[in-house]
Image (cartoon, rainbow, N blue to C red):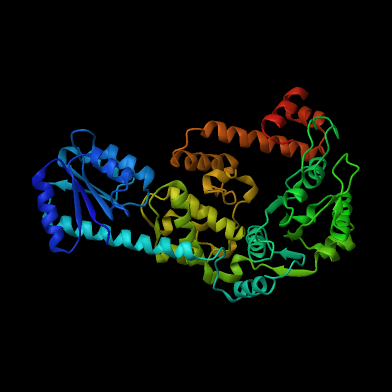
Length: 493
C-alpha cells in the first residue's frame, strides 16, 4: 500500500499521527512544510506517490490551501485532508468546497482522526479499482441483449473490409460503432476520419470530401486534400448520410464503384483506398421513395446493415453507463468523481432518454459541475429528468445547446451540456457550458465561446443560403468582407 503523507510544522502532531497510523498498519511519510511535499512529488522520490495527503492549513513557507491547489492540479484524484484550528474554519470549508476530501479541526480526537483517514484510504482504493476497470473497459459498454448482438456483429465483421450502414436514433453511439469496426479491422493501422455530412453547407461539403486544387474557386489559394485522401489506407465515416445533397450522392457513388475521384477543379483522377462506413438516423428506404436519395447509392452502401438500439431499449445498461460517464467527466474537469444514489439511478433508469446515450453523457457532465454534494440524489437531477414523469417527459433538443470543445474532453467526441431549466432556452445551455469551462480552470473562456458562437452563426447562415456568402452576410447583418475574414479566421474555409 502507498504511504499516507503527513504535512505539519508541529513535530508533536506528526509524531502522534505517525504512531497511531503505525498501530493501524498504515505506512506514513512526514514533511515539515509544503515545499518538501511538492519537491517529493516532482522528484518522484516515491514512485507511486501518496495514498492520501494530510496537511496543516498554516505552515511557514506555504499554506495548506496553496498546497491543496497545486497538488490537485497534478493529482486531481488524490484525497487531501486539511487540518485546521477552529479560527480557520471558514478557510477549511472553502478548501473542502475546492476539492479537499475533508477537514479535521484541531485539537482533534485521535480515534476520530484515524477513522477519517481510514475512510479516505478506502475511498482512494475504491477509486484506484474504478480507474483500473475503466482502463480495461472496452470502447463500448453494454450488457443488454440488444448491445450484445451489436458486439457480435462487430466481431463477425472484424476481418472484413465490407461497407457497413449503421442505423439508429441520434445520440445512440453510431460513431462509436464505426470506430470499433475500424479498430478491429485489417485497416486499424490506418487513419479513422469522420465527417458529418449534415453539418457542412453543400458548396463546402464537396471540397471537404474530395479536396480542391489551387484556384478552383475564390479563396482556394492552395491545393487541399479532402477527407477521402486523409483517410487513405483507413476508414472514412460518413455520418448522417441521408442528408447528403443529391448531386454529391452521384460523386460518392462513383468513388464507391471504381475507387477514383477528382478534386474540385482537378483533371487528374485520384485513387481512393478507403473503407466507407455510413450512418443515418433516417429511414433511407423512404427517402429513396421520396426521390431525395439515390437508390443505386443506397444499395451500394447497404451491403451490411447494423442497427444500434435506443437507450430506452436497453435500460439495464443505464446504471453502468451513468457511473462510467461520471468518472469520465470528473477526470476531464479535474475534480473528485461524484457518486450517485440508488434512488437517483432509479429515476434515470425510468427516464425515456429521447437523446439516447449522448443525453445521458450530457446529464452526467452537468451533474459533475452543478450537483452540490458528492452524492447525487434525485433532487439534484436536471429538470427534464427530475420531474419524475419518466416516459412522458421529452428532453429539450440537443441542437439548442452549445458543444464542448474536443480539447476539453481529452480528444474525444464533443460533449454538450443539457439544458439547465426547461424554459431556459439556449441561454441556459450557454450558462451551463460557461460554468463547465470555468470549473475546468481554463483562461480563454470568452475567446472559446465567442469563436464557437460565431462559427455556428456563420455555418447556419451559409447552410440557409446554400453557401452564398453575400446573401448570408446580408441576413446576418454584417459586411461581405467581414464574413470572408471570419470564415478564414475560424477555419471554416
